[in-house]
Image 1 (cartoon, one colour):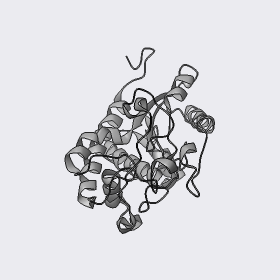
Image 2: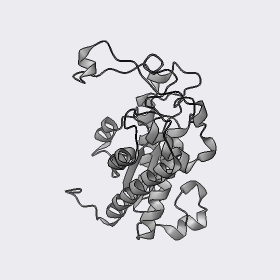
Image 3: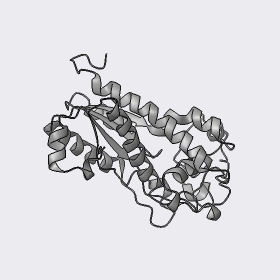
Image 4: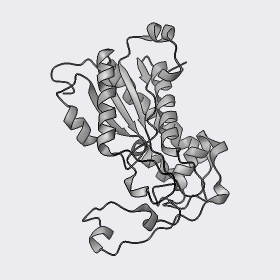
Length: 255
């Protein structure tokens, strides 16, 4: 069962159309501690999109997964070698062009399946609202599985190359994980009380915050924990895709 646009032929596209929903995985290219690859976010978003779309398609959804975007906003991790960065303005221009392509092909529902915390899409969606016929929905995929991660993981701290992220990547791409190379993922505390209590926010220079780009201890990660996270989360995403595929767009949509 094919859902990824890059793997489909013209015949298959013609046979499958019309598509109701397009899913756009968007990741980043940056280090995740010493043990996960730079493409972790993009590879994960693409695989999560594929699994979710396949599940939704089995339920009758008319869905296609667009090519994954491998670079995101990484200005605060440029202190590590070979980090790749697109500015928010660049991301916006690419999103706009993708939306215009979907409009041309009469696909009017788009889910951005975000896999990187540094990517900010809300202002882009607001900017495009009312100017394009495509209705855009944003999903930070890991948020749908937060309760599952808290249940299966021993170390619930951290957010980058931690136990949860390492577990789901071990499940999906075991050949790319080198857990023996990981450090403990400890990070430095900010000097401002407002930052500690989250009264204020500031961009975090990752090379000063972390030892090796990791935030959270990955040492207790296992593929089985990752399987539970991936299976439970993709079930929920599939339900979202199916519901969106079935709904009819009206002048008052989505209300």
